[in-house]
Amino acid sequence: MASNIRNFFLSLGILQCFILLIAYSILYFIKLDLCVIGLFIYSLFLGFFILKNKVKRLLINDSAVIFLLFLFLYGIFNGTIQLILNGIIDDNVYEATVIYAATVPCFLLGFSFKKRGTYKRNYDEHINFIAVSNKYNALLLFILLLLMLYKTYFFYSIGMLFSSSALNVNRLEAFAQVSQIDVVIGLLISSIFLYFIYYYPKLNRKTKIIISIFLIYYVLLLVMAGNRRDFIPMLLGAFWVFVNLRNIRFSTLGFIILLFGIFSFNILGSLRANMANGLEMNSETLLVDAMTSNEFVYPFYTLSDEVQWSKRNDYEYEYGKTILLNPITVFIPRSIYPEKPTSLANDFVWKKYGNQESIGYAYTPVSEFFINFGALGPAIVYIFIGAFFAYIQMRKSQILHFLVFVTILDFCRGEVATFFYQFLFISFFILILPKFKRLMVKQ
Image (tube, rainbow, N blue to C red; front, side, top):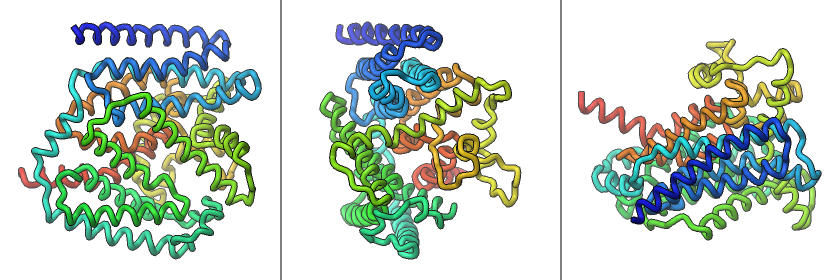
């Protein structure tokens, strides 16, 4: 009986996804600002409703829940802020908001292909079944120590080693010396930490203590340098494993705590930016600044501006080139391949501002799918993304699911090629190398 009721509510939710897509199709041509924002917000809670009826026990670390939340946040701010402050949404922001909002019901439709079952059970069975090699653990701890020593020296060389004055330094200038090798080393450090976090229940007490000390040191090292992004995957990974072990349900309180944590990072970012510029702000001004100038506001301009530029006669769509070609060429050094495509983020800055190296934008995948396939592109692609999330949750080994979960934020705010590049290195010690080792043993 309970299963039939759940199936009925699920079907009702899926029907509403189709209704939302019809409504967005109409609203794209008929401008109703408040209606679009209202439906966009409603689609988030519709998503929670569908996901809760899709599984018997919806956990707060469900990758579909977290992805849905970040997908929503990167699309809702600009139109909402303009509507509140100006009473009207600009035409290009309005059209971009409609295009972006349509990705939410499409993601939910794709995820609806998920079969019954819980990834927590798959994780528990995988952890209990697999044998963790003590020799491999020791090797990774040794490599981690060497890489962290390098990072320590790097921060010392730029004067940002546990220095409170680093918070007042312009990050673009401070990290101008960062090479691609430094970036890769940071990703490999994350990969090792994520390996130990995923297999934490299988580690002996000594290894747990060592890895905890290393992680605390590394987080403090990054925090004091004003670098928040590089340790977020480890925090998300620890959160994912902890929720699985404790079996914590998704709830209204959990949702509020997640939002509080996210906006705390935004406020800290605004506080640090103003300190670096020598500005003093009271609590009210700081709050307004955090809402109007934050992680979720600026990436949206890559879509709204592309929508505006697409109305020019000389605008050319990529038709899948950046999605298929750039993830391959991103690994080729420019010294070998001078004609290598530049990043979409750099192209965007050049088109918008000219040659300004001091300006940076996060180019969202929604924007990339738009420049490849037009207004319908993002909605169609997000159906496949939803289906992919359903697939990784059903796998017996949850390593891929775990890695996708910890990189959700990077995907939502970055182009496909950059995400693929980062994902390859961040999965090296936890997924790629162990799988290669098993293949060699079989042969």
